[in-house]
Amino acid sequence: LYANALCAMTMNAAALHRLGAVCHTVYGSLEDERASGRVRQLIFAYHTIKAMRCTNLGLLGYRPTAFYNCVFDETRIRKTFGVKMEETDLKVVFDKMEEIPEKICQEEMARVQNTYDVELPEGHLENHARLYLALKEVMQQQGYDFGVIKCWPEMGNLHTTPCAVLGRLADEGVHIGCEGDVDAELTQIVQNYLTDSPTFITDMIDIDEDENTMTFWHCGNAAPSLTNPRYELWMRNHPLAGQGSAFWGALKPGAVTIARFCNLGGEYKLFLMKGEVLDQDRNTRGMMAKVKGKWSVRQVVERIIKEGIPHHYSLVWADVTEEMKCLCELLKIEVMEP
Image (cartoon, rainbow, N blue to C red; front, side, top):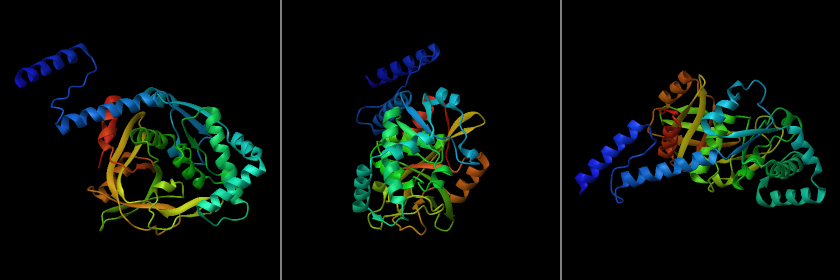
């Protein structure tokens, strides 16, 4: 019976290929993890592709000054991923902040103070509360499923740099990528659809060749649920610009998938690797995680520089590397691994 089944499978697969039909042949029993795992990957990949084709990405402003890494090709994104985009000017957000009733703003400020260890300059907590309430309302009113925001310099000039706001919103299912980086946000969208979990858009700022570790850090935009409960979590002023609110803390240990979609030469590729976040406190202001993997950190950095991969990555606390590779196989996107 197995011999006949295998013969029929290969014969039918060959016929479908000759017809140019899209098909997936999985060989093995239900008890075979290789077969069931492949089916599971295909289901998640197709689910994510379908969801992206129904995704409305909101652009809250464009990109920060001179951040050419964050330039994007809207038509290429629509063709490759199916994601559609609309734009809402930052002035709409600022106007909405002013419209928040004083009583509601004061209630939100009290809630933040009762939840987090807060030390902010005068007026920054009010700006945090107003921006948090305004962004939730704008995202809902505009029908945006995800968003990206131009978080400086205009927002900093108004003392409302949004890092801590973005982290809090991510824990509520409102995902807004920072620094106007649409391609990083595409990665966040995929990882969120695969895991239903918040992700961390971050910079890779340091390597330790002796420990073979990489340090991932950003100003303070990680969701509080991603932090390590063994260490303190603070809400403080922005660690670089000093013009808003940000979380300072260490991120929790566990398996992570590190990824970024990149438009290189007019075609999308996926930079992808997996690692393990170590149980370690932060050693600088902002949010950070030290990651160890089976790859060579030196080779990873050299590959990043050689390929011209931009500086933002999306981390999700799960191993979804195979699911992301399966999605790229279906979308005909090249995967770049260390």
